[in-house]
Image (cartoon, rainbow, N blue to C red; front, side):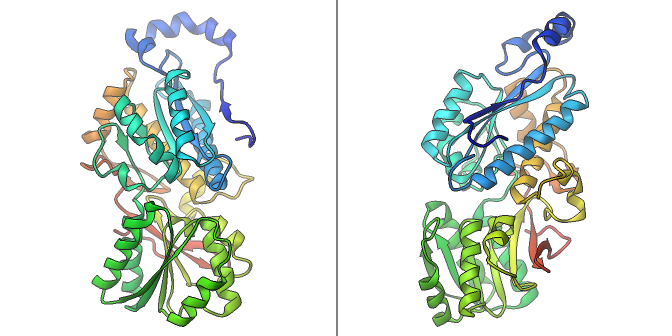
Length: 396
């Protein structure tokens, strides 16, 4: 991924090579393949809207680049049933209205076969449009409730929504470290409304008590006042829902004020991203942080080596691993379609015919009535300044 360019295209065959082999490949492919958008005898074109610039730039670049590198690896081995995958990425700056424009461009001008996205606002911006167009939306790097509730015939998810993430990790932590009081710290966007309610309900169902919910903004300008309030409330746990960088800045202020909660900080998946440690301003104590890792293992775990090896010179964060995971399931679904690749057959396969599939770095993927194809989360913590798995099990 090259920052600064609004669109990146990988041309997978040269014009000369395509001309040389065109007649042979065209005769081998199904007759209707040329009329299916994005599908030719030699390639399948996918599209992505991603916030390559803006507030989620790090996550977007990792998600898109690791998906691309997964496709590159598959293409180098001959592609999927003889077709290579082309990924067209357009920058939306993390804005839903721009993402909608991108989706329209991807369908009308680029004529892609299917679309994926990265980012909550991005995904929300295009959901209804893609549903109306009946175009597959495949495994976005997003945690929107609307992806799976209500179920959309064209939309398929891998990663638990924030409310499912926070419920699963809170139950697990309360089971391991004991019941206690909690303060919920959340960013203002409505995407966290259900997550905050889910966290409160889980704490109370586990026998704990929510002392307060503190509202913040994305790119919170200062954390001192929030942390002063936390010191006044003295919770056993802090449950946090915002961006990785904001959580890092929150921890930096907590450390400066000596306000670490006695039992730990519990958070949604961005808490497990490298951007949290990069902005934390110093060491994070062992076993202080517990973050949900939806669908995949922890990026630093031995099981994630195949994904890390896609880009050996880069530190892979959570969103890079999610990009590789989404890419792997897309490839497997296309492989199972065989030579006859259509949107209708893809959505029918994913709806109720996708039998269990597993990689070393992801829990089992299979069809589900709600189209959430992985129902579990892993749990990450920090030891010796790095993320590690808090448990080898996936939890629900």
